[in-house]
Length: 284
Image (cartoon, rainbow, N blue to C red; front, side, top):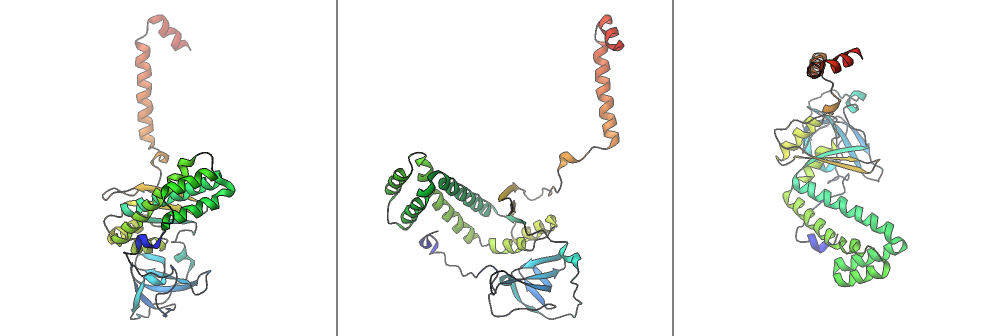
């Protein structure tokens, strides 16, 4: 996205897994993080040099924490470190990520997903001309050309579905506006840290997110391997449904009651028939 669109909203940030300072904490130390106090169980190095994350034991369970989410060191209480596999069993797989976000975060993600989808479709339709369309789009964003020139370039490179390409610049601008609104809200960093805990207990993850902001009422689920993203709205006061209610079988007594009601309706229908027909039905 063009830097001038968000230049008036300066924000300092580091690489997602790069420490904000030269301090690297070690196993056994107690630290204060944005999601609570805990004790470091292990330090996990990332694939990129000089990147890492912590596995921390909290009062509510264990979770992964980025270095930028650690505020400072706490006095040690000489608690024994538990590095058992039972701790990691409380965590989600790397293939799955869930975040409870605000409405602004939800809209920003939906717009971004739509933009990526439209660019992929444009790539399939334009073929070898896609790189030139993308170059023209960048020129439009930085102000080298206007919308009419961009559409003219698209018509030269693609004979059909030009409307598809012409709508992309408006979507890019909408994405930029949505990102600015998310930045102004100033909740996404902490909510993302909650998500990075990788807690299997979604009720706990939801409660942690609602402590950050009462607006965290959108459930966003990302399946990395399948390239899918799922959304749902879950307002305050509505319980989180962790299983499919359609798969829940009714008790035997309910099934028996339902069967007897159905039987009763069948018999009543027979009684309303003429005698000859009733005899014929009963003989069957």
